[in-house]
Image 1: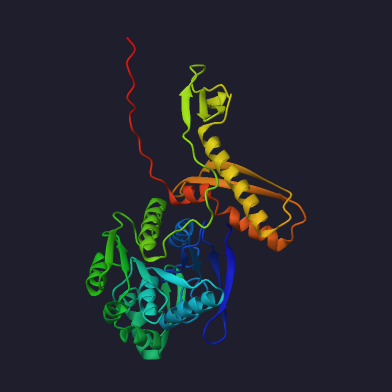
Image 2: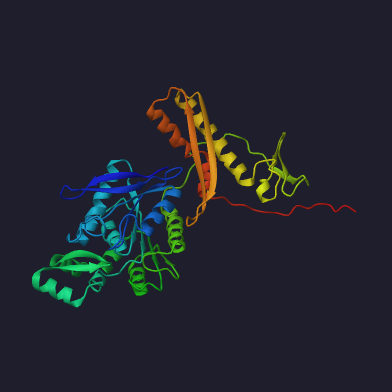
Length: 402
């Protein structure tokens, strides 16, 4: 399901526009991602985290804070209080739109802002942080001493951080010094996941220790091993994303199949024909077909390849599910078809992508087409692929021929 823009109004009447990554499959819940101090909604960590949670059935809103990040114009003043208010405003807007967030995920300063904001957001069930500082005074260590002296003397100073100019006012420094993060963590009383790299050169691993000690159970810690602070390595970003998605599932409503599996499943037997290198007969009950690999890789091209068979299962389940739904709702669907392609995507975890192209024939209006397409994302085979499966292998006892 493609992402879309989501606009909401922050305190003071100004508007922020973020990217909403809808949940894939049966919705489990909604989350908000809070980016790092010098990042934005399209940072690697934000994008990978949002997509991983989306695949787990958790929709995610990510947006540029008005007080930090990429949404402000060069020279605009930054404010940690604005970040916290932005998170609350985003949650209120999502709730009003029927997408109440139950999970906050924050990267670096965004993680600290998530902790501070969650204390006054009763619908938040859990908070996950990545490389978060345990005190906001840490930010001041990013400034040169002469910048701090200028702020103290003149009330503000233009400070360059990560190659971008930020206007830092004395109120920002005063607000940082007046916030007790440890106290906020101890009062949070929500499940917390702390993720941090022991090699983080921006926010040291000691910050993770402080957050973990101050947090109340249930709390969890995952080491990000050799990752850098910004998760610039795609493998590190994918790992962090998959860990948050797996952890968050425990604190969200359980997955329940909202559409029944229609067919009575039978066993499938694949046996070599000994014709060609890969050709097989695939049998289930009275049905039989050939499976093979293309001639380009040594097969005969006499049947569907294994991934084509998986794609065929997804395509067939999609069409059957749409037909069942259309009949249940009385929609005038005359014929449906689906084309499914499979590819391996470098840098994505998991790397398999199945793309569906759906054709709906009949005098359907736009709303009916949208409803049918939405239910296609929740067919049983789709959910099996999204959630993953348990595969067990046993060796059959075969009598030796003498």
